[in-house]
Length: 256
Ligand SMILES: NC(=O)c1ccc[n+]([C@@H]2O[C@H](COP(=O)([O-])OP(=O)(O)OC[C@H]3O[C@@H](n4cnc5c(N)ncnc54)[C@H](OP(=O)(O)O)[C@@H]3O)[C@@H](O)[C@H]2O)c1
Image (cartoon, rainbow, N blue to C red; front, side, top):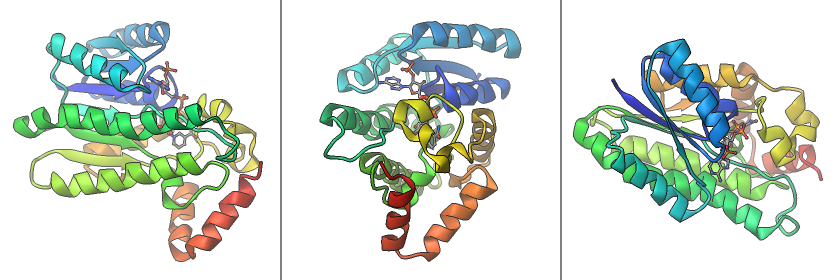
């Protein structure tokens, strides 16, 4: 049975991605900090889909936390075919006013951990010649985001890294896909502070719909998946506008 490891599987998009992969017959490895939520999801997945589910808890915002998770994967002799780098966080506010610890934790989680986990698990995937990487970015990747500058920059990294990796792995048989959600119902809105913005709350999609699009796109080996026509329209329009215009618009919409 093929194995998929999903980070940030305790809620939102990650939880729904875990359900999608399990429904597709995959053995799922669920990673996050909230042990109770992960155990509950693992029970639900075993019952509903008849596949195995393993829980590994850890803090992905620290290098040692990531390395402990990789060690546990090896110690338990788990061979990861698909890595879903989904765990992420955001923070609305001016760079100079938000705490530096919160913003560097964000860079760790959204950028460094995604990179470190991919580097740790990819060589075995290449050797086996199947599986791949599904990275969860955001439509924030396509322009700068004043009042959320670090988050937008982190998601630009996720898109650029995924596209580069995809070219490096062409011909290996591996799938490499970037899922780029727009506003989505999950804890993210409240945790990041974005939930209070009209531009966010007026156009959310369900985490289930986003995960379904991401899972299907990954299975088809699409390069980029942008769920929802409104999000696709937004990204396409961004491509036609000068960067100064898009960043000023985003700054207005995200006024704090
Ligand atoms: N919701 C949106 O509007 C939206 C839009 C675009 C992109 N995204 C992206 O989608 C991804 C998933 O977000 P979501 O909307 O599903 O948010 P969410 O419901 O808040 O889920 C975030 C997940 O990441 C995990 N996580 C956070 N910090 C962690 C840490 N230090 N160590 C380990 N796990 C950690 C959380 O688990 P624990 O708290 O249990 O550790 C949780 O499972 C993120 O990359 C986000 O940037 C979301």
